[in-house]
Length: 198
Image 1 (spheres, rainbow, N blue to C red):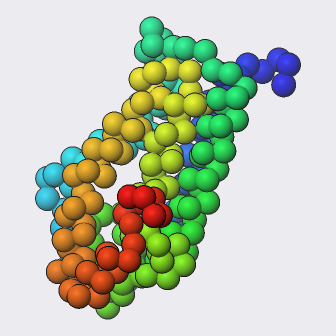
Image 2 (image 1 turned 45 degrees about the vertical axis):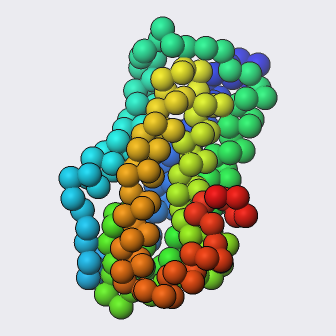
């Protein structure tokens, strides 16, 4: 640890977190493709928001992590901030895995409904309607603590925030159109991403 800077440790933790996301998502991605999509809503605004999220959560931080660009926005990180960032990313991975496990073959990376789509309301979905977004928000926040660069640190919040605010209303409207009163009842007893708060 003596020969390794906390900036480098933060970068390594960020890279491991991204790899962890890929590993967690690999199997559900394969399994969900076996169930055909019945409804797909992917207008330009959806494709744009997905690109913004990928840019902010992955591409912009990766450019800084691997090239140091743009270095004029660098700042120091401390052991405390790196540890906090690591714990936030770990929590993100935990919630991400639980959402995939709960959704099973109902999962999709976009605004899709699978054939014989079921409304998932148990497990991690019992109190929160969008726990996967909760996990993504944690991922978006973690680089602020892990990465010693303001652009790389804030990119995830801006990128994923774009997707979240452009998508969540349309997603809830789609679910309400599909499940009707069942989804309206579910909305009354849950919050969007933070139990008991929001």
